[in-house]
Image 1 (tube, rainbow, N blue to C red):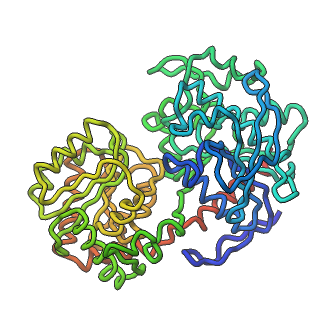
Image 2: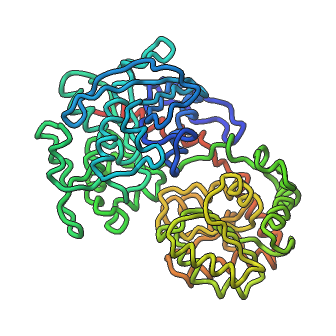
Length: 515
């Protein structure tokens, strides 16, 4: 087959460029925005299918039905699955949105966890994932999708994270070995290898698999002992394994970054790759952001003029909203994310003296560990004239803080891809990041001379973070034109899904013709 064409134009208004070979692609995942979302997985399940549709493919996204959403109407199909040895009936609901066939799998097990979709034991989540994996495979037969089921031609399944890592295993064990879906292939996207679906070794017999497929689940971890590991089997069985950035693809093959699966990843090295996520410009774009159209906030263009006008208006509105002194000459440093060890919040807290001695304002948005929340509130009380902590999450305030801040702090200990640094750069907010995973891939370090888009530090240590953060603050205060140049370069990058969709397309085509 002829090689597909790369996008001829990139950016928000790039024209759709269709691939020369049309694929039938089925995404399966435990969450999909806006119906359900706990993190980046939900964003990928929402955005990547739409971008692949724009390239001319037929795409379905299969997800649990945690609620009965108004637009769905009545069930369009049903089937009986053998889930871990028990016959289980599921119903399918379907709607068509942005060119994507959205398919919802209805079963009581999903309604029961609607308010905490990953609750229960590892085997509870594994059972729900087993059901969703099989329902996703079968959807091509049972969901009409406008009167034309997908069938099995040019069929690629894309499983997301360990919750549905059983899909590649079931595809081979229950279909390929029984002369069904013989040409279908699978890809597994690894969003976070730290979550693997580990449980006791004997639980493998509860999966209902033939004996010769159970060995792939066994992991003898020197640190944590023997276990059944769902993600390990998914990596071994998937045709392609795609991490959410090239840097993360490398990290998960190292002993430090593989969380016990480095040997498995290295053993599958020829099929492992990494692709950086993109931004959904319908949701995140300072030119059209619905949250920047009231209360003194303004939309603004992706240029120097936009930075000096609309972004400064957003900064002043943010300062008024938070009761901070309204000063355009003081940089606002922001943190947005979970308050936990992974996100490096402790590195920020250890630099309280730095914030106290610098002419800066600092704003936190997030929730998580109670002790970290208490420490942030304590820091706010001690420095109320310059520090604010918003405990919890507000999508509106996340947009407004991204628009109004000057610098985004992301000292994450590990970050598979990261989206906040992408949002920040698109909004002209300069990221200061730990050089790991997707942060390494997406931020170019500014050294005073080059075309950098932010600042990076190499080791997750408080003094290293303070040093590079100090460089960013100094550049803002003493070399404002250079700082604006860093910000505008970030704004004018192509950070959308167009190129990522092309890269995924390449990997899925490779999978289609793999033996």
